[in-house]
Length: 139
Length: 413
Image (cartoon, rainbow over all chains, first blue to last red; front, side, top):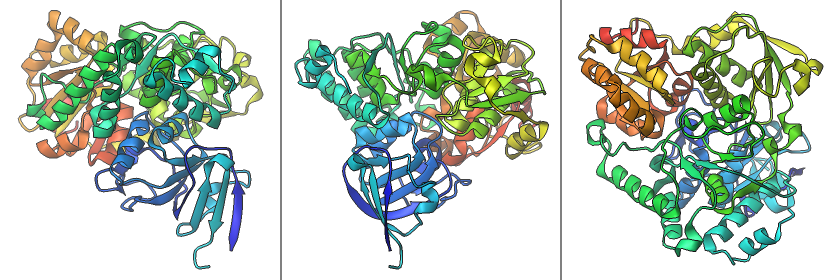
């Protein structure tokens, strides 16, 4: 089954990838072991999981400004997500996506994006159109 | 976005490739947040430690540093957040020559761009605090929340790339907290239990930040009976921004945009009480009485001269336990003053180390923890204990007095 989600115009180029979803928030500084490419914060909903080449889906961004540089640094080494989708991004993550050339979108019209997309779904992100196409896992 | 003729010229590359990069970056960000145009800013403050920058980030600065002087110099006063390496003390911490070299390259590039290496997250206490209504482009969430809330300045969280862009162009996209509509309260909290001391203020800020939970939620707080000190409200804001990504708060009768609840629309909001249970729930994961403590850290934010005096007073005439380390992080300016006044000497005679121009969590915290075998970390900063869980530490929280008493005993008192 395929569904189309409308969101605010975002940042970056079109990408396709597999979703990794959590009803949690995100900071590159607080939550990641960026060398190993995994979520390292023990209390994070995705603790221990790899984020490499995933389309990450979260509620919102949290914490400090470091994430803006870190997205760029992660992308330069090729150990980075393909895109990050939020219900509400903060300014830092958007700025970091702009520098890194990483796709990022937020403000979905159909409700909570962490329930609209499931882990394992194949997601196509079109940031400049404000559109995300979700192909449900198992289809 | 509407651009002025000067901004159009930057975009066309007429003022050099660095300013062209900067305007292009600002257009992308401004578009995402529906900015109608740019707003001139008077200062920029940039967070950029080598751990976050990596080779790729430092290379970006070096590319700009190689440009002709007229093309590379920032166009407004621009200052820096703490560095990741104290170049006078890194090997003993377990930091490598590679880390120091990345730092040296970054410093050289910044100097070439005309950036002032203040290396501080307490610029509002030590450099040039902004004034009510002043538009600025600040990084470091603690700096932004203090300057928005306590000074009444106007800044979004400007991550390093955006602060650099603002420094180069002298403006930033007009969205978020530059606009009146985003400065009005969206959540109203009532406090009945009065905070006492820095850690209490930090914990209260953390509770409210966690409840507010989004950059776009602005808390107004009522029930605070006494005006906090600059250090207390510094810890309050830094923790709120850390837990909630919160960029602005109002305290009724205390912060400058909120003499009365209705000044920020708080009278129209449902009041939510901050309960003793909320405070306890925040503190509980960070309690570890009786456990061995590996390292005590005072940082996040850097210590003011007054805090340096307090720590020095607690250390004077006493000695740290053999199995425990103490690190104190402050700005280069405060470091020099504290040295002149004998405060650093008191901390060092105790067995602690004062670091200048760094902040613990921004200085390769994972690597220095592994190098020194530090696991159990104790601090009076609600912000730092929130951050360091992801860096492999088991962080614990206590007051400044309890931290020093624990450092003496070698276990958490």
